[in-house]
Image (cartoon, rainbow, N blue to C red; front, side, top):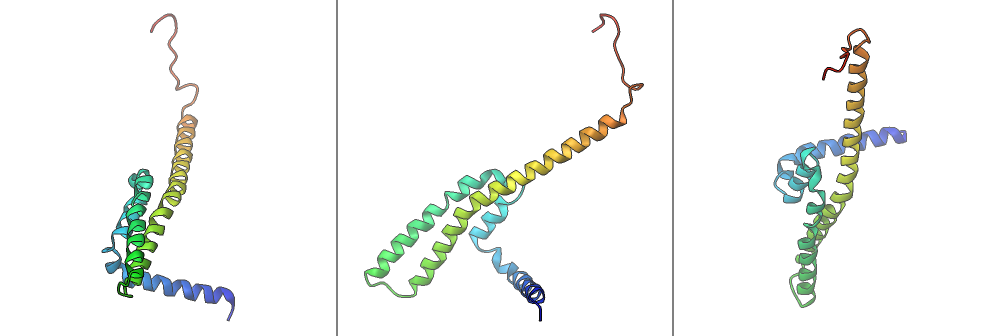
Length: 135
């Protein structure tokens, strides 16, 4: 089996997993925030969304202190979840800035193409010129 076949198979498996987890995925607040930020109107909220990492980092600190003082061991899972969400929120800022740059560049290219198309439609005979001192 070739490497490309393995990659394609893994990609299909990950797509299937993502489709199966979609109903549960919408329940998690960081995923909902990420989906909202990655819309065209939401791209401007990247830095405020990054600030949401602070409560997660504070929760990690608080929970690790509690575990070290003899707290239950299952809190390690909650610490990992909070750390993952903090990293996700921190990563959201730079990635949404890149996405915003791409979107603005595409919009610029489309505007420029539309402008060139409209300029190519008008011929010199169609351009109206006001003569004299009329304003």
